[in-house]
Picture (cartoon, rainbow, N blue to C red):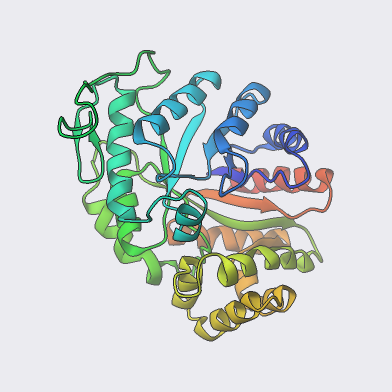
Amino acid sequence: MRISTLLSYASGFKEAVKEVQALEKAGLDVVWVPEAYSFDAPSAMGYLAANTERVTIASGILPVYSRTPTLLAMTAAGIDYLSDGRCMLGLGASGPQVIEGFHGVPYTAPVSRLREVIDICRMVWRREKVNYDGKHYQIPLPQNQGTGLGKPLKLINHPVRDEIPIAVASLGKKSVEMTAELADAWLPAFYMAEGADDVWGDALRAGAQKRDPTRAPLEVFAGGGVAIGEGLEDLRNMSRPGMALYIGGMGARSRNFYNQVFCQYGYEAEAQQIQDLYLSGKKDEAAAAIPDAYLEATTLIGPEGFVKDRLAALKESGVNALNVGFAGRTLEERVGYCEKLRNIVDSI
């Protein structure tokens, strides 16, 4: 079971990379590099490639609207080369507020667009001449568009690998089904072992039925905050501000995918309350409104026995890789929790 974490560079990017170096030595396997509407992820991924030795460097995530499919493929191939085959291309649709509000691109047909992007990326890595006639992407551009001079081309360089792993961050039923069919890894948000099958089970099974049997099983990343030891339960509260942001304020009131997932877990009233508070500027009250039971069920914070029980529940629900945040207040504490988690995972 691989252990992954999200790169957090709020206190400085170079400092964050030093932490990844320490976590790598402690047993970290994958680092997700975020983008959202901050600095671009590929620049940071290239820097990580030069300053790490073993971890998989994954975009977490690149939205499919902001780059052409061939550029996404070229970028992943370049980072794979720099890292000696340690890249994972994390893709997602993001949301209309970011795509239309920051990139100025219409947010349309996210599922079918993702499907076409995956197809084209794999063509590029196989060094096929890209000749693709999709609903959203026509490569080369048809004769009746542009100059009419486009011709099919293939990647000049030979990639380190002819297939780079693709992870998809998806939440909706159709997008999760597509993920289970085509992707190598799934990065869900707000994953709760006890409710995951009710929310995503049918979609995952439907996608798995259509999956190429020669492709390895889908890697499912989930887990939550990590702090292993006695009397650490208060550290669960460190997750509150981030959860409140996503449940309450990530997206428009009428189109917040994270809020919808929280509702599907049975927290409809709480989801409404958190959103109302957050959008009215009461962010601390929104964070306080997140149920304690939900925090307990979605973190790995507590005594070793508790952590083992939660890992068993995650595994039973279909999780076969961990996506965690180390909840220590110092680098030494976070590295220590990574080492403890590595030892527990390797022992079960």
